[in-house]
Image: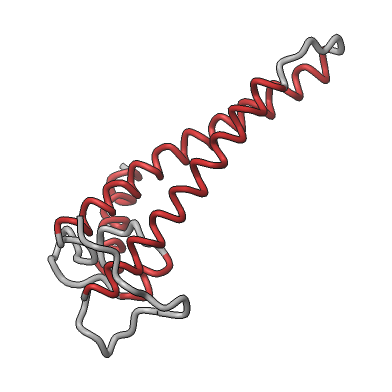
Length: 140
């Protein structure tokens, strides 16, 4: 583990600095960790809400509505669980020095793309090609 480096609160990665230097890596590492912590806090709130919310509702319609709400909430949490796994993977790539590079082409992923989607593993062009191929195969 590297010692935590100083990073100003207003720091934003810029194209005029070396790609994936220590400051950029630390910026994305912190961004990913904050995102993960937010997701885990939401999950804890959901679990507490589900445990507290267990009650006997006599009206069939109200019960069905509550069960539907719970099912939607659980589906959302499942998507977030998968997202946490992707965040963990991105954090591993930072530690291994592979973060920010396209897994298909090996080229750097744009800083704007990484800032918008820090778990991105492909450059925009590679992602578009992947989605076009996926659509072609899906339409068959």
